[in-house]
Image (cartoon, rainbow, N blue to C red):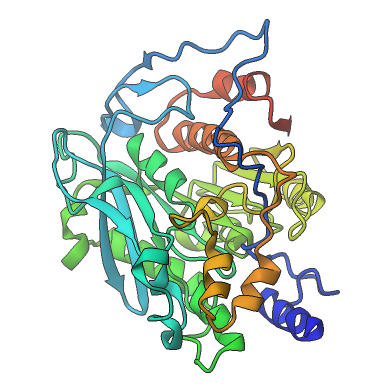
Length: 403
C-alpha cells in the first residue's frame, strides 16, 4: 500500500521529491498548529518602530488611476468590500474577486468543497459533515466603477488543490484595489489528482501556460460574465502569482506581459521579460515538499529586481487556507473524506500534512499577506512601499529572513 501511495505521489508531482528534478510540488503537505482555540498574531518587537496603521495617500495610482486610501500596514484588510463571480473561459471554471461598490449588499459567498471531488464521489459527503469554505465577499455585487482602472492578479493553485485554496489572500488583495482571478486547472486540481486512484478520468491534461494565457486574453477583452470589467481593468498592470506547481507562473512574464511575478513555495525562477519589473519568492522553513533551499535557489537564479522572504516554522501550505478548512466537528478535509470512504482519500492523506509543530496557519498568512501585498502595490499601484517592505522582518516575528 505504501508503494502505491508513493507511486501516485510521484505521478502527481511529475517526479518532484522522487529522485526527479521537477521544480513543482504538491499542495497538500504543510502545517497545522496546535488547536488551543486562539490565533496569536505577532505584534512588533519592542523597540521596533512600525509604520502608522492609519490610511496613507496619495489616492492616485499609476497613470491617473485612482484608489481609496489604503491602510499603511499591507497585511491590514483594505477599504473595499469584495465581490465574487464565477465564470467560464474555454475549459476553465474560474473565480474573480474584485473591489465592490460601496454599500453593496448581496449574498455572502460560500464554496462547497465537494465540487472538486472526482465525479464518482460528488455525493459521498452529506451536507452536515461537509467542511464548507466561507468567503469574506459577496456574490455578484457591482464593481466600484468610481475608482480604478484596477490592476489584475492571476493566481494559479498547486497540485491537488483548487481555485479557492488561498481564498483569504485573494480577497485581501481585492480589498486593496486589485482584480484577482483564479481557475481550476485540469490535470492539476484536486479531482483530477484523486482520479489517479479512482475509477474516473481526468478532466483534461495539464497546460498551465495555455490556461494562464486564456485567462489573460479573456480579461483583455472582457465579455459575457466578465463584461462588467470592461473599461475598468488595466492589463498593462498585470501580476502573476502561483503556489507550488502553480509557481511556474514566475516564468511566464514574457508571454503575458506581467510586471510582477510571485512564486509561493515554488522552485521556478523568474524568466527575463521586457515587461517584468519585480519578482518575489516566499518559502517556509519547514516545507517538506518544495524545500526552502529550492525556492532560495530559484531566487538566486532570477535576474532583475527581486526579493526573497522566509516564513519561520511553517510548511508547504503556509500561503493557503487548506489547513484551516474543517467541518462542524473539527474534522479536516482528509478526515472527512476518509470517514465517508471517498475514493483516493488515502492519496490525499499522504499529501496532506498539517503538523501540530508548525506555527498557526493565520500567522503564516499574515506574513504572506504583508509581503505579497506590499510588492503588488509597489509594482502595480505605483506606490512607494520600500520602507514598508524593509520593516516587515522587524514587525513580524515569523519572518526568518528578507533578501
